Length: 130
Image (cartoon, rainbow, N blue to C red; front, side, top):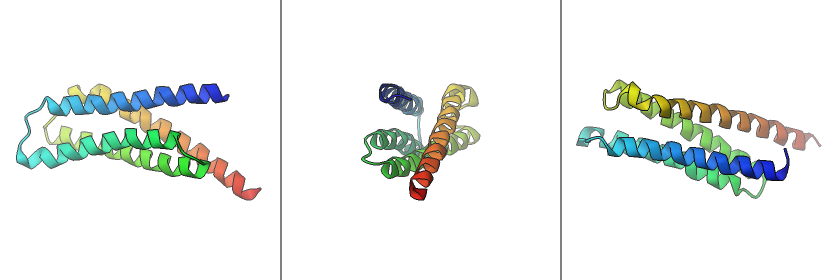
């Protein structure tokens, strides 16, 4: 991949993560929360927005090792986002229908970031061998 392709890919992926996080935020803000579920709602907002912030930070990394470290966090935050969405569906706070598109996008992002993580891990291992 050429540098301009990588930059374009990063910009598109930044936008995808932002839109996913905003979709979650808007869905949750449309719901009436009670004290008992407010902490779970806040946790989902935190991890989904952390996914966005950490990916942005990764793309500004000063080294491959720093990029890899941030991508590891992004994968964790995506996975946690997926967990809390499923939790709220099972708790009947949100419906599977309401979250179908969001869950599909989060699943795609997990696969994408996991692949990036794997590639970076291999790249760093090759650098160590040299």
